[in-house]
Image 1 (cartoon, helix red, strand yellow):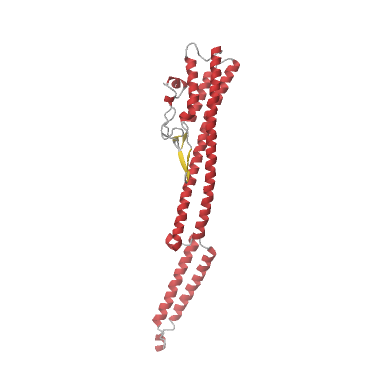
Image 2: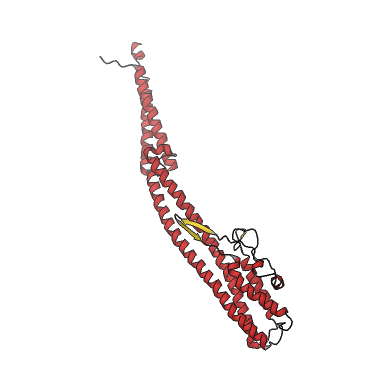
Length: 309
């Protein structure tokens, strides 16, 4: 004979109610977070796969962030080089005008102004540090503030304070790009010319360059035009190198972005909840809770004590 006890019925009904409440809480969590679980423990056997995928995501995001920083630096670098190149071009124009008009009335004033343009370009800052100073980013790479100070220096090399360490960035696994240039690389040629012009201007018997040009002055200035053309070409070559690096970084970053998007989809496929199923499970669990509560309420009316009374 099978015995049916009131206590056993209550225990069974309460157990069913507790289970349905747990299922309801789980469904509610999936609906509110839109995730299958809130930690790796909740993903069970897939936790190791998710850990590997998220590690790859983090590594690739690091490369993307580095590429953005490098791109920003290269953009600033290109603008600074353009300013140096513009200064050289204006020097050539000023000397050309002096030779064509046979007069150097405002030549040295123009050369001083273009020295300042070159100086600002070489001492350009990026994110608080000097762009062309190498690792010594807190020290201005070019020290003279005018042509007089430049001419008074022992040598052109002595006016540069940058070190020899160029900026390098790891933009991908196994790929490190040297993206930095140094002030002495960019400015030695043009500052040598400016120093020679200033010394010529202040040397008795040769200068000053402030009036009608002599034959010796014309010969000297013509030679400086050729030197300026060579100096300008050197800066343009470095600008082209900067543009090539920017294109390479952009290409690498595009590849990383595509990889990260693919990884994001893989992670979402494993972590994102099926919202239609989650909402259905929530509704069914709520119905089950109501049914379990009704069963418990009905059990109060079928107690054996009622029959004994």
